[in-house]
Amino acid sequence: MEPRPDHGEASYHGSGRLAGRKALITGGDSGIGRAVAIAFAREGADVAINYHPDEESDAQEVVKLIVAAGRKAISLPADIRSQAAFEEMASKAFEQLGGLDLLANNAAYQQSKANILKITDEQFDRTFKTTSITSSASARPPSRTCHRAPASSTPSR
Image (cartoon, rainbow, N blue to C red; front, side):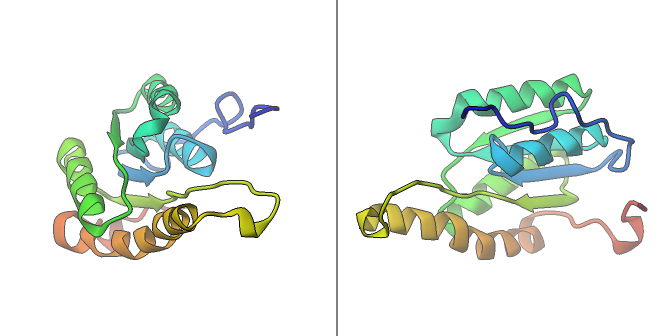
């Protein structure tokens, strides 16, 4: 993308607000998800990022930034358009981080068309499943497979 967006790589400095936390960020390879991954790591959280397998090179850039912040980074490539795929990915994040405190559900599929009538059925289906179905899927697995931090341990602002 030109110009290259600022995701906080050079501008964001954390202050330890998420020290000791464990976070899972879907869509963590680019855009808002990338910025969240960088910010969470710089705030002291260990971070697992999920991304579509086609985005491996972008994801590895984010992993390097998380590690540079002194935090543990887990990369979880997966197409999470189904409940089963989301649950499997979330379980891996839970196991590899030793728990989960935070979920940033940011997975999305974006495309640009000059005319809405040019969107194919497959593109529409992928957009809908990625942005809508994973939102409801992500609300369920934490109650089954992942730890939620008690409300009393929420970091103060």
